[in-house]
Length: 298
Ligand code: NAP
Image 1 (cartoon, rainbow, N blue to C red):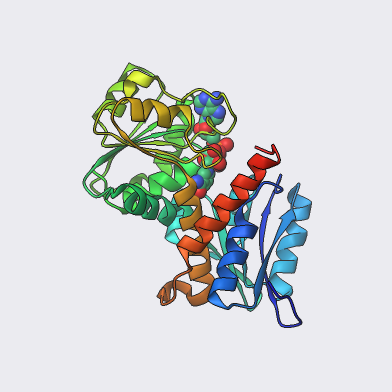
Image 2: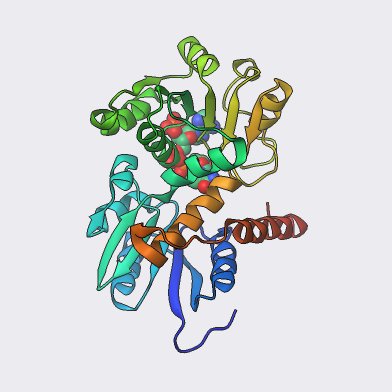
């Protein structure tokens, strides 16, 4: 990568940020696209640092930036405009900077659907889905399945009030999609077993030795299972799914798709004429994960 006086900055902000795969994925894509852009990670530990970064993003020629934990909700509130996807998700993970204004997007929404289609040949339209978890990633998944016109979505969370809040935010847009908030309970077991697709949107699986967020016998043959965790090749949930004869995919495809979609937006807005190279970004992310393994960092 060559940096010169005309290089335009992009960024990923979060806390902690050292483990982010965005800089390697994005810089590989910029090089392949011949864009004179560079992606730099910014450690943003608190709201004061976030305000400082946002001021810089407005004034210092940034193309855009990605947002990770814990700032996705705060950035939603700080943007000058937000898309429907971001509003329904309750979070912004991608910002486009132009003329001092910040436009907020949520590319996790498209990332979920793109990965399901590419990695599992799954189209959510008319299908039943169970999402485990009710945080930011679950909010994006819920928005995705509502916009994709799923038949029904059950949000299963140990704290059922958080699942209810996600559903309350999106209910008026649900049209034909039936939405249910459930605690980890026998009713949730039935909803999971009835679903065509089961999505893990909890962090369980990020650390070696983590259990699955649901009992193994809730998974059946014929399920498609997506674990949003991308840190390991096969989580306990993915292993249980494969043992039951289900199709299991991890979260790396979604990570690549959401990052690629951010670059698509920065290049062309919503016109979508040019596409970031997903294959190049995936190879860069896989190489970075392999390097972390070698260094014992995950
Ligand atoms: P979050 O906002 O903190 O939400 C976490 C959710 O998981 C909450 O509903 C929480 O339940 C639940 N949870 C946490 N620990 C649990 C446990 N031990 N047992 C059962 N439930 C538990 O996190 P997030 O931002 O949504 O991220 C969730 C996961 O998705 C992370 O692994 C993240 O890396 C991944 N992710 C992946 C992508 C991708 O591109 N592949 C994108 C975004 C996120 P309570 O409400 O009861 O606390």
